[in-house]
Length: 211
Image (cartoon, rainbow, N blue to C red; front, side):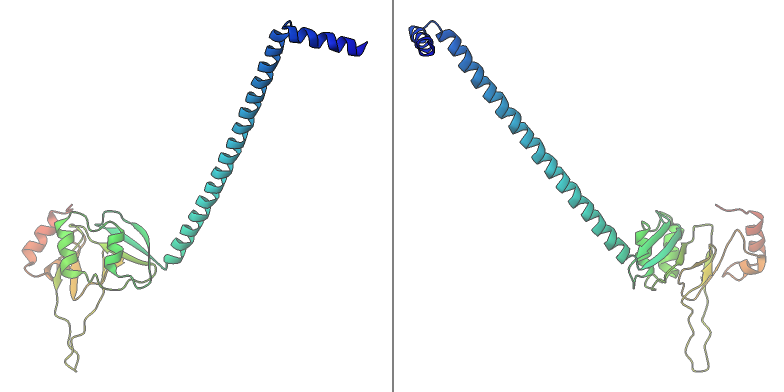
């Protein structure tokens, strides 16, 4: 009986009665296969991108850690640069750095003619900086400087002081310089400057403050 039914079904298919339904079944099967393959392909691509991003993030984090370690190793000397510089602040320098390196780290001298002339004439930029040193570049109203002949010892050799504290608490490395603040100096200190007598000194005091 079963074989007779199968035989009749096959006979009908061959006659074309079920061809239309067979075509629908085949098309549906093919469409299902295509959809499944695309879904699996997208899943593989997403997983691959996720793995790639994770790897890149890990590499970036490792690189930042390496750079951070290099910065910590390079920070052998810490100095405070203040005054007439473009970017006052605390900076890390390598061992053996000089005052000029500290000034450049702070963005260089500001566009102040007096400050630039002060640096050019009085500041020893080749002097090596010390750890935790404060470097102060005076503004126009901070100081007036003059040269003073260094004292001579019995051997006939001039003694030169390589540093001098000025307003701001800075050991900036001046050579044979005497500096006073025109806003804070006494009459006697002002009169110690070349060309400044009692009358001029009193006028300076009367017209304070200067900016």
